[in-house]
Image (cartoon, helix red, strand yellow):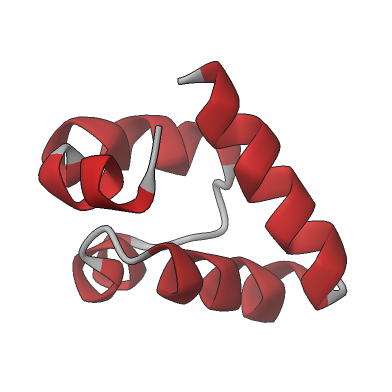
Length: 65
């Protein structure tokens, strides 16, 4: 899945994102609006992970969906 597909399918993906990263709030998901960099930034904030780790994690997750 590429960046354009994320934005186009965001409403369907929101539930799956929240299952994977449960610390993200509905408000977070509304603000992200399918932007991958915003998603990565929010995950980094909520989980305190390194940027590289989050990017890899999101890329792996997207490859499965």
